Image (cartoon, rainbow, N blue to C red; front, side):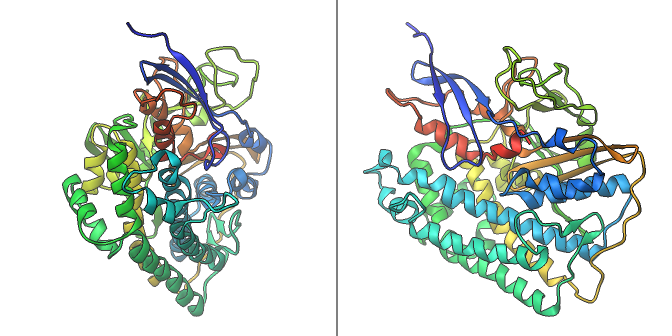
Length: 494
């Protein structure tokens, strides 16, 4: 006889940026239905209304202290399109380098500080990997990261923050990235320091994370090749992850939608490092970012916001109504592409870019293991790309072009990729002031509520079927699935 569902409220979650609460209906030892709630409204979109458009460069990066460069890049791109500006080629290259360094630092933070510590938990005591996970990722006496792997990762992350210090002046919340390029032209000495910092990150990754050359991991093309690499002699935290993931059955957890989205990442004068497009039902569909954006709507039917009709971000509105009755259960809208939920993130980015391993892992929908592999793959591919970008910097060239004046009436969209996935800013200017500003962040896509048709968001769909053991109030499988998406909840509700 099928039992009646039991309601569990999971959250707040530790090691998650911002506030997250998930309502789980559990039946017969598994999640039957999940409702993901973003419980904190922050209001950056209405905050922008009536302000001079250029204020976006100061205000919207403060949405988040982790991916503020991504917000700067999107805001500058929206202003650039509204102005009809073209950045200085060398400035675009420098901005891509700054942005790539931030995304890389985010991946390191997620893997070492957010995801892997779960394998050091007492629940895994006695498993073959547990003692090594505890040594590498266990918490210190005060609860701070105390494992040797986490400590080494923080040193590597500091090197990448040094890249941002040299080129962006500070991190987070730089004003260096502008519609016309970047405000600081690096010297020849700066260029040497930048290259040294990136090569230091490579040395850490090859020694601590992969136990060998980045290029060897990036060359893996099939799940079978990945499994063979995981079982080959050698160290590295990536192999430890794959062993723990196999033991914990992560490849059978967290199956999400079969549509993946990327706006394309780190766009310089030679084009983006990672291409834009869609990966749909196992098929690659190259698209320009603007073409993808044309088919986006935001559905507020299950959000505590005024308005019930889905609309394109150009026509969107973000006015809170905390008294909105059911079916509302979140501050987050439900973004959709042609009516379909889409997953975004590093695995999506790599699949859309056409990497064979990423496409194989994303075919039919991603799982908790595949999402983390996608980040590892991006680390292995992004570090060499940043070395190439850095080597191409020419201190003798201009890094900033003078943009034209902002028209009294204009609109522009800024489409880019944060570490967690597709990020879009939509700006409307009327009478010289901001008349509309809408933002769809990566976690808005992945942690969206249901839409008007009742279709769940990507995380909600991924949680269905997750096992819940007797007495679990914070189910371990749920934790793994949630962290596989690497949520940034402060960005979700802007």
